[in-house]
Image (cartoon, rainbow over all chains, first blue to last red; front, side, top):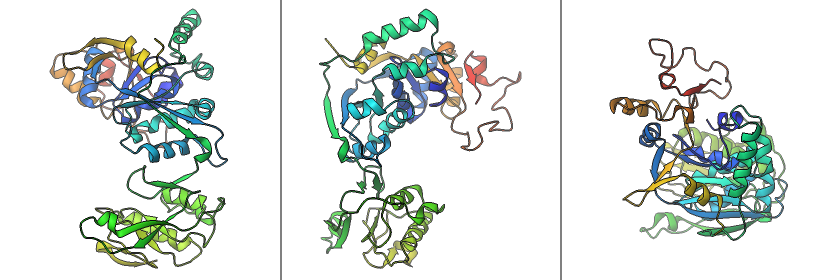
Length: 313
Length: 98
């Protein structure tokens, strides 16, 4: 859906799009206001070509400056989610702007970031269309042709952003602060970038009333130096997130500890063991944050996982 | 009053304000696929309604497409009816094969 639309020129800037898929915001990369809808709304749109919607607020997210070498627009969104939270976008449409995004968010990159709007809780995400958008869409099977195309572009000029628009919220992010992010928890907002300190688990006595807060006290340990590729890159067994983290981390012995979130699936547990085994064969402390539903872990050279008992790393 | 793209598109597509405070919004392009539309077509049939704007409705297979096999991802035509057409084709909806 989200590939066929742009490729065929079905997706056009300045239009409204609806699709029974939560990631429909992807089409915002071409300046369309695109909503992911449920099946009863699909029925409504089929029958009436309209649907009922509450007013959304608009948050402008500006990323300015030069991205680090290892960072991509995709990385930027990890930072956005960390900053605003997975529910931060509830009730909002996200407008992506700023010098970094203006230069990068076209075609695939724009689709990736707009696609992820929903991961940040926003129903809609879009980029203001520009010449790159028109160049991409011109001549596509469903794009207007001849004078109709010129009229469409002229009409959109009227829609183009002018200075002084009112936004319900503006978030500005310095591109230099964006670095590849490793997620460790149970949602994409729970992550840490590779230029930050790893939070080492220091065990404290639980107060009993707040297990999550009581178990681990984050404390800085060490900065990771620049990333370099590792042997783990070749492993096909590693889940993508962990693999990503291994690719970005230096080899070996520089990681004081791996912190993982809830370990519910046996397959993931196995992968964690594999990861640890691959870090230079060292006995690496693995700590689990004691997320509800996860394992009641402990810090140490072994990984203890609830019902599965003790698993040696 | 200058405003952002969202507001301009929203205003241009507003049909009317509903009593409950929501806005009835015109949808320029409706993309449908095999997972969330069959039930909607069923509800439409039960209500005796037709697709209002087939020319604004585009269908393709989506969720069942395997990553590595874009050509002929399925052996049989999905939900073909008596004359061999998929249900949405009866409604005049364009169906894009991959």
